[in-house]
Image 1 (cartoon, rainbow, N blue to C red):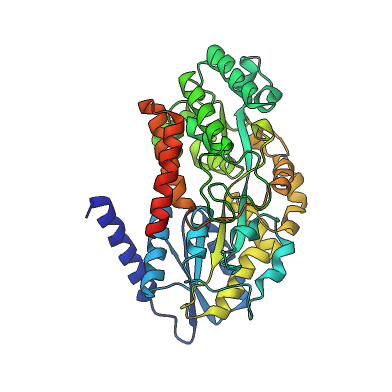
Image 2 (cartoon, one colour; image 1 turned 120 degrees about the horizontal axis):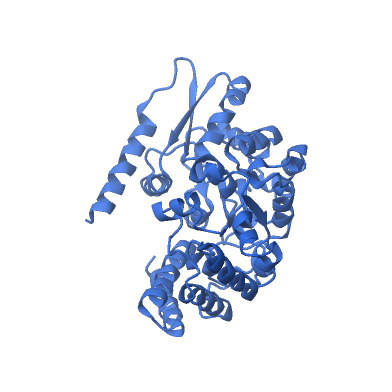
Amino acid sequence: MPNKTYAALLIALAALAAFAAAPAWAGKSTLTVATFPDLDRAAKAAAPTWARLHPDIELKIVSLQYADHHTAMTTALATGSGLPDVMALDFRFIGKFAASGGLEDLARPPYNGLALREQFVRYTFPQALNADGALAAIPADIGPGTLLYRKDLIDKAGVTEQDLTRSWASYLAAGQKIKAATGAYLMADAADLRDILLRAGLKDGEGIYFDKRGQVLVQSPRFVQAFELGRAARRAGLDAGAPAWTNDWAAGFKQGRIATQMMGAWLTGHLRNWLAPDTSGLWRSAVLPGGVYASYGGSFYAIPKKAANKQSAWEFIRLLTADKETQLNSLRLVDNFPALVAAQQDPLFDEPMPFLGGQKARQLWRDIAAQVPAIPVNKYDAVATAIIRDEFEQVLSEGKEIAQALLDARVLIEHRARRR
C-alpha cells in the first residue's frame, strides 16, 4: 500500500474513533458535526445560538483537514461505523456522496427540504440532487466566480478592467502588456484558464463532463477550446506554473508576481486573512472574461442514514443554512458567501470592502450568482476532473496532441465509470 494511501487510511480510522470516543455530558445528548477548515469556524460560530435554543443537546464539532475529512466520511459511510449526525461536504464531492446511497433523502418527510428551495440561490439545489431525484444535502455557501486583479499592476501596464474581461483574446493580450511592464504573470496556472473555459456556454441542466444520459462530453468543442487557450497561455509565458494551494501559488500573491486570479469570491477572504494581507487595497473584483458565469465550489450539509440524532441534525442544518443571521455571521467571520437569498439582501452587501480598495464587491458577486446556470453533478465528476487535469498536464509538459489527450481522457473516464 502506498505510504500516502496508508497514512490517509490511518487518519480516517482515527477520525472515526474520535467520533465515538467522547461521551455526552451527564443528562445531555450529543450532536456530532463532522466538518473541515475554514467551514468549521461557521459551525463553531453557531454554537452559542444552538446552546441557547437546545440547552439539552451538546454540540460536538470534529474537524479534519479538507482531504482527510472527505476520506473519513467515505470510510464511515462504507462501513456504517463512527458516523456523525451532520456531515459537511464540499461541492467537489457532492455528486459522489449523493450517489452513495448512504445519506438521508432530505426531500422526504419529516424533512421536506425541497420546500426551502426557493429561499436559496437557484443553482444550488440541483447540485445536491442525485439521479433519482433524492436531495442529499442543503447548501450553506457558494462561490460566485470572479476575476480578482491587482489594480496597481494593470495601471502600470496601461491595461483596463475592460481589457481583462472583454474576451479571452483581450485577456491574453492584456497579459502580454502586464508582463512586459511589470514582470508579473497574468495568472498563476494555465489550468485556471482551462477550468473556467470548461464551464463556458453551459445552460441549465447541462453537465460539465456528462450529458443527461451519462455520455462523456470531453471531446466537445468546449474542451478543445479550453485546452487550446490553456496551452496558448503557457506557450506565451503568461502563467507562473504555480498550481492553486501550493507554496509557489501563495508566494506569488505575497510577492506581487500574479496579476489576476479566477476563482470563487471567497478567495478574497483568504487573500485578506492569510495569503497576502499586506496587499490590502491593491485588489479589485470583476466579472470573469468572455461573459462566463460560473460557480467555484460551495459547501453543503447532509445527514447519514445511520445517524443517531436525525431530528436534531436537521434542526442544526436549518440553523446553519436557512437562518439569515447565522448566514450573515458566517459571511462576517469566514467570508462564506451565503447561499440564502434573504441574507444577500442585507445592507452588509452594500458596504465597501477595504481589501478591495473600497469596492462594493458583494453587490457584484450577488449579481453573478443570480446568473450562474444550474449545472447538475454526476457521481463520476471527481474521476473525470482528475483525468482531465492529468491529460492537460501532458499537453503542456510533454507536447501531447490535444485531440489525442481528449480521446484518451474519454476512454479512461468510461473505463473508470464501468469499474465503479
